[in-house]
Image (tube, rainbow, N blue to C red):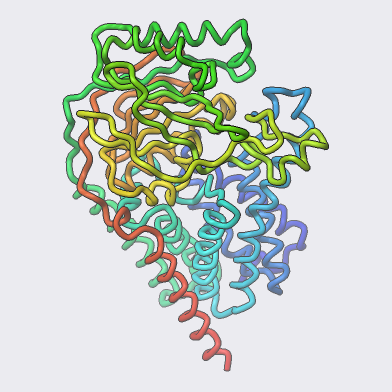
Length: 501
């Protein structure tokens, strides 16, 4: 018997939203993954109490809205940088982003309920449809996979399954291990009904732990990389009174002894456009004293502007260029920008109507003796498909970012967690230089070997790890998991239809 079925509808919706908020506690910086699991288990009886697919979809929307509102609360931070211009958008951004993303999950709830079946079958269907909804959220309309369920496992042994299944596969495994268990515990309490969900949960946990133990050890190249962090607050970053101070701070970090083998500056760290930056690049070369430097800079090409990364070799010559290709909507560009500009709406990081232009796509940059780097600028590291799109396997991942946009609460830590995930998925080290932090050297198992705390100016010298052998996920990507979920969905649908007829 489902006690929740007798509760008023409004109470079930409120509880669903509350469970969504609790579920988001598993994400960084809290990292209470057990809270996410408990919330998912308790969600099952609430979902099963829904009498119709429409009410199930609404309950799912409430749960997801609570989850995303908590997980993405940092989204209000960018609007406070230029408060006079953007602050009015902040509540709308949080409401519409949370509610909009929740529509993916609402559809999953409604479809699963529409098909029906026994409680355990219904919740297994829900786990599958939610997993497919996460694929849609990660890919549709350029995608926004931030706050995926798999992110709760960062810094736990279970995260190593990312190298096998990827983020969508690990998220699906988490849902399949919890939602049917909730149905068995609270609805179908018989030993037979409970046996399979318990076996699935225990089996998944045991497999994950055994797999983590068998991961190969990490070895190192012997090369030392310096990651700089000037800690320039966004409201001061381009201020003429402060920008020279931040640049001088990075020059001092670059000139510090002993000399490393590579130096990395964060996103847009040079306060000039590339075509007029020669005095700045000469100063960097002088400070580096023969050490190659990767750095972030903006550049213009005709009427187009780009968020770029360049490589200065041992002679200070500009020998590599990468333009960011996965831009942040309403941050770096606004859809129909020239039209929106007439109403005073611009991308927060751009001053022209169209904003930044997208580069041609994923590419490698030669880092000399250290090997080839796959450059990722800012939130490109959120997208596993951007890493999978590399033309060939890199020797390391290189993320430069300006997390000053994300504030000082949850955003920077969630961004860091996703960088750790990309390292595990590929079996590659990640070099991460962040303007305000957290800058870090991440090994191929996703572990942080050296880091500089959020809001701290300075630099770290860290030894570059060697890459591991290519992972299963780096070879096969997301398609096998996606088609496997589609197949399970079809089988469960057919099974339920046959039982009902």
